[in-house]
Length: 354
Ligand code: ZN
Ligand code: ZN
Image (cartoon, rainbow, N blue to C red):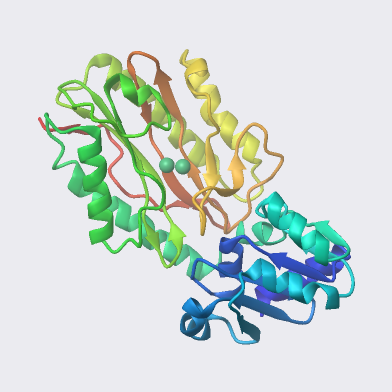
């Protein structure tokens, strides 16, 4: 199996005999198991999935051939601790996802416990055709929800009302759950990049920023659109135009080999040149897959270059305290010679409830 072969190769490279996989997204990626409780114990020769009775039937159905399934009444940590004295050589663990308490327990039974960061996460950055198909489907579901919600927003609704309606429409479109807590922020509240929806009533002239995503076959989508309630003011039109131009310029720069830092810079330079540099304080984008935020990151701190098969968001924003905020977010997949935009919801400034 290709993914496990790549893990085995990485284990050799890092001089590890085993890897304890406790991050559930990594478990799913390597084994196909979609339940919520399982660990993998992977060696260069053999991989065991450890879960409990609740998932027996599901594991037998889903887990890729060649992986041993171990059903136990104990939680996976306890099972690995029982197995640990028999393990020879260094045992890698996922330092980014194992709790300190679990680490302490594991350390008391496994000798040679070694942090092994990013073994699976690195593989997950490059999506295969099936993964891209699932992400595209999740993106299309979110697009269709946008088409519906812009016809429903009207004066008198609160942010919570709109968020609840988006979540309902996502579920109706067959999204397993929303990919993350849906953001709806209106008026001055929209200046918070990651606002939680409130009971604030949406009024004429308000910006309404909506950031949400769907999940299909475990894979997430992520999109943001900012609309205006009623007629857009000249300032709204102007700021929206700057954000959109920044986003389109950045997308035009995405291709294999492009430095993540440079793509971030394309958008940032444009926003800065227009005088809003201080109002764009977050990175330009992030990878999306089994988790809503994964690698690679489009950020000025990144040292990575893009590769074909990466799926990233491109989401510049301008946030002005007391006034509001505008963000436009699409997902793109890096292709052999550029990128394909996976989000197809309308991108011109939409006036709703008018
Ligand atoms: Zn988003
Ligand atoms: Zn995002």
